[in-house]
Length: 209
Image (cartoon, rainbow, N blue to C red; front, side, top):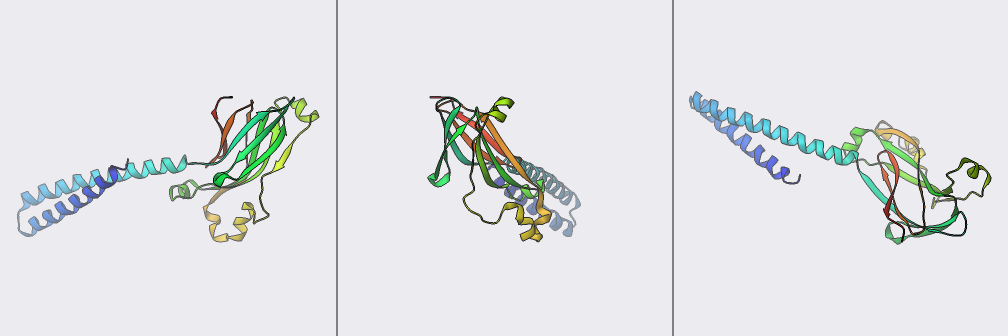
């Protein structure tokens, strides 16, 4: 799609050139020549508009489907229903936990912008909250050992306070809510944790090894 940018500039230059030539021909009382030049200018202008619309639509699609990878989670099965989870964040910061259950569970607090704000380049803001183990069976969830740990690194201003702290930005905000992702685990699996405009996503990177 990058090739459309120089094409758009070329079409703009040609449109202005033929418009200028057409107006000059009108001043010289050459109506036929002026009509042809202005018609070419109109066609080029329509083509330029269509190309610009295509670029904007493609850009918007890329922004609205934007995903930001925020961590890699590696799991290893331990004895019974226990497993270890190693989380590697950007800049190689690492956290390790021992969890209980059949699935790894992560949740976060999400601040979501309006779609038109996404088009302007605003992406979903997030603050990771907790990681834990989750059982597939409801009775196990009630009766067996549960495990949950915080992922918050500090007590800085919460995302949910942003609308109060920055009232001028309230009109950009579509929603603020909690988002969770969970996925079954086997020993040796690796998952990518990402945040998108709709919330958290856990995606397996490869099979067990």
